[in-house]
Amino acid sequence: MSTYTLPSSSNGKHRCDNCGEIWKANQLEGIKDLENRVDPGSVVPSGECPECGALCYPVEPDPSELLNACKDIMKYVDRNGLPVNQDDIRVILPSDLLRRTRSLIDVATQK
Image 1: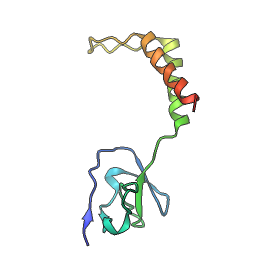
Image 2: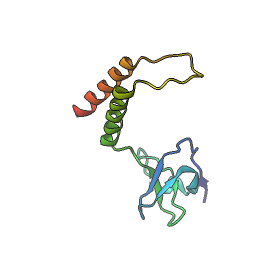
Image 3: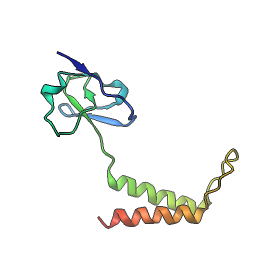
Image 4: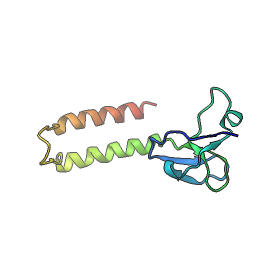
């Protein structure tokens, strides 16, 4: 039996398909016998659950949470302007940031 460890490039959350526990990528175990547990063309699991040994998969962000985050950023910039990083010479105009954020909100609300 071979053990397959996926590269952990994601710091996101991963949910166990059996017990529902949430784990960070670095907490997951390598996948034992991957080729017999996953069908060709299916979503590749992140690893094995340290508690029950079932397969874990990345947790996708909720689109409504992303939309709310964009709205919060827009409100903040509207009220306070764009914070300036003293070490960075590049400047992003608040109007440009607001325009891009509003376009993200428009796309998200059209779905």
